Length: 310
Image 1 (cartoon, rainbow, N blue to C red):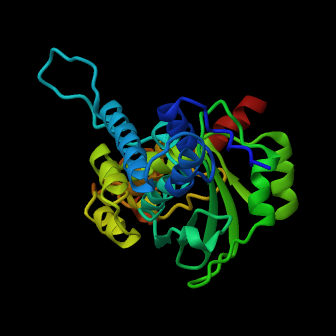
Image 2: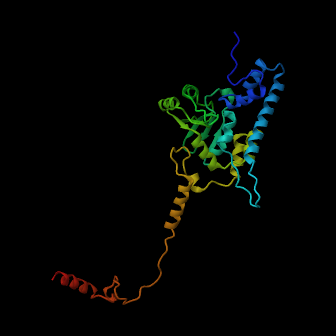
Image 3: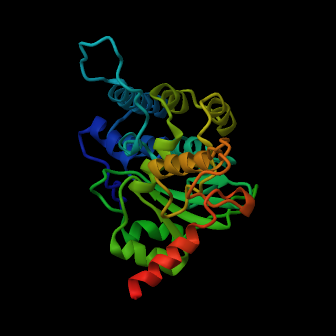
């Protein structure tokens, strides 16, 4: 009995099938090549892989072009820098997304690992923080397509501990969309922390990865160590951002962080009145009664009150 092709495969549509595959959760180049060899293309696997890599590179180039495109401007001033966002990540395969998200998270702290496909783990990214290790499954798709309970089961039921290195103490799911109600219920039952498009958007906004950095991550086949080296050359995160926990479900906004810094700066630099009070000024009370120029003022005030009641 012939097995059914994966849902991303469209008969006679090689280009569309490859793009669909990179949108689907868990699809990688090897699986794409095997599927096309079985159902579509009668050619050596190395030639099919060259085709798949070509379509992948084309897609990455389109993302970079969209990222750097600017609205025509007749003034001399250039537009603000464009940074990678959730929409860019949504077009990637989970493994490619893992390298980019790992680059973003390590801008806060720590290091990251991307498990080898041969381990057949349910996770796509491991973030080694100072005091704990977090493993994530990644779900890339259009923002209007929520992650379902069935999709999240791979994290709830699959293997999440790598063969080497620190084992995760926290399991999370990252999506370029959100999670439906059933998926959230499953996550609650299994202690899986969920990070949807809003969280991912915040991480990418903080990380400020440029299209050039994005291109290097995807095209140059860099190791996590090489990617983190690139990250170390970028402008450091503001202290208030770097000290915040990106996994906090309700972190302070950038504006709130800026306001807190302004308040702290004002509190540490309160103005001091160096002026010297003039001795004997009428109506002013001093710590030393001999310096009070109007020491009969209270008596007159009391006499006035008594007069009002007479």
